[in-house]
Length: 489
Image 1 (cartoon, rainbow, N blue to C red):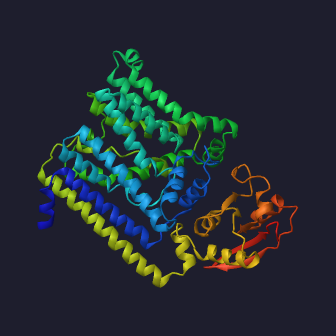
Image 2: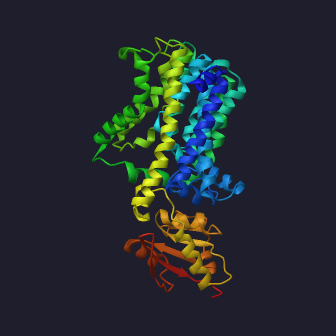
Image 3: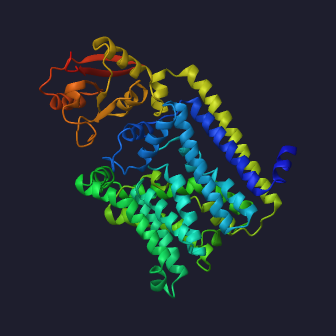
């Protein structure tokens, strides 16, 4: 109690920095307890090694970040986890800076503390992929976009265009955020919209955005719009659209329910006004647009195009939801701040204890195979170690430069093998344009499969080469592997 009272006497900026430090430490520890690397993160590493203007599933920026990060730091799971928390910390920082522009300091602090209770800033923050990077990019864009609308400084317009470009180079649904900001711009300048949009600031913003994104558009045209094809094959299905929309709305309502309950019980906000958007001022219009427009457009788009909504699409949507709720507070006092602070710090303590207990229980009662599948993210380092040892025995003095196959286990070879070999994904050169023609025939490769379909693909891709497949079981998981020998052997 004394410690809490001492904390509450500090300036809100100092309180925010203490909260941010604790958040990073607790969630980093949670990640370390489970060696928390998932398939998406390892895929980012595979792509990040090979600089491209796009990849067959997604736009390129998150992979560039991973590639640049590991060019500077050791390639270990711990440093990957540091990257995940740096991403969340950056997002919370920009969210706080924006909240300070919209609310008084104490309310801004509470609005950001509430985000700790949103799974996208906590549990989901343990990963780094095309979705999770938006946790930092969306608040950063919104911060500079709001400042540009309010102060009309060229620097803010340019930075909004720059970060908006990075967001689009991370995940195409970021267009929803740009539309939301545009809606706020239109509302703010509804009487003289056309004259305002042609002023230097908006034009510079657009020019910077186009400079950032046109190379990727050129790549898309020359690579048959592969990410769009991937999305169409995965999400554009007619069978379960309605169910997915209901799921999307229901799950996200549950995710936001802690903030809603605090708004009702602590801030005494009536339900009839709690969710009502307000467009009376620039600040209120901006917050309402950012909170509502992306979600509504996502749902409408799913209905129009018969696309299955994934709950994870909402990962970056609610960084201003705390501001939206706090701005409607009927009661806000020092007691309100104290209640929210207690809840958030109790939650962090509970999470740390929970992960420690789970780690102890799982280590006692589950074998490694079950742990792997329960926590799909845990990489099995024994597989890369085994493959590397076999390669060195078969081809002494020859580095393993290439691996080929399908599935997340292939990515573990690229990440954990000493030479971090380039990957031929699904034995498909279109998905792996960084593999030069004849490179595997010259330097050799390890082929890794887990099923008959994968092996058939390998035989088709290397039909002119004799392949001797061997079976191995590691941590209860069955694999088949074969070597394509280097030319000198």
